[in-house]
Image (cartoon, rainbow, N blue to C red; front, side):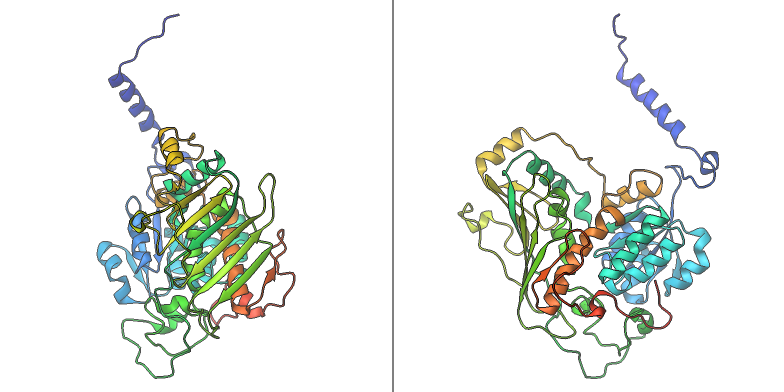
Length: 444
């Protein structure tokens, strides 16, 4: 039978009509369902710095219902951009008061507040997005993962490279055999770009009137305000942050963790400059070893921070052709090498002939391409596919793997890890490194 030809105009019209019928009001779908056409009411906790980007990202299509920040100066940009949003300083007050009006929550605070804010949102049944790293300690990560699994809501960690084109290309190229069997990966970063390897300041300093310092401390032990902590400089302090490794490794290690199904390491070997009690060292090199799994052989992942950059590959003759001097990742296979940015962006093969071949004849796109990391989470909130970096399946295990490196770094010990449980098998780790005590009034 002859096939009936349909004009493009008629096809587009029919598709448009079909789409129109799928966009229906929430009440038609019934209670508990959200139509793709409905806007989420989103409450954002921590709205300065990277938080401002997160507010803008989710606010592109959704309703920014409430903004919460303890620092008026840091929050100014977001407050100006969304003047109709309700304003709060204490996220506990916001969530308790506005629970019935909030559908989803973003958390973009310093690391030490991630778990307490995220857990409160999850326990209320709110879709939850938390910046990387997922939490500051291993115990907090595991609590978030368990609670997210029970809550059955849409979750996502803010390691945006996981939603990017480059990370998908890396996995597809590696699976297609572009560099053969991968046995080693080098990672390096220009972090820290904040003070580390310092002791606690002793001089007194006034607390700026635009910062609620008690709320900024949140669950962390009390200490007087000092500009050595905030804004931004908190990352190097163990009470507040997770150092250069915690800041960047959830980006840098993401592609390898996903593409090679790394799981927990079996061994972590730390090297660093002088250790300090309260802050991360100036620079470190941490070597993770992962056992063979399935058809994949053992893999070694080497992390460098604090300007400990690896040598430029011999395949790169001219420095001008190497844009990865201060941050990047190098995958070493038995048939070639692949280099990319720290977020997995702009991957390329160092063998020019192979690169030309894979450009001309790329492998099939096995992994869905996404509009943006924010659109991915919002679609999941509305009943779509779970975000790739959701807490139980990816973000939690990835963050645990990263934070195990900090345990090795802080204790200056080579750690043997049970690859099934993630527990340290050969050394006694101080309890406070794994689970910190919270100040009164703060809990998960």
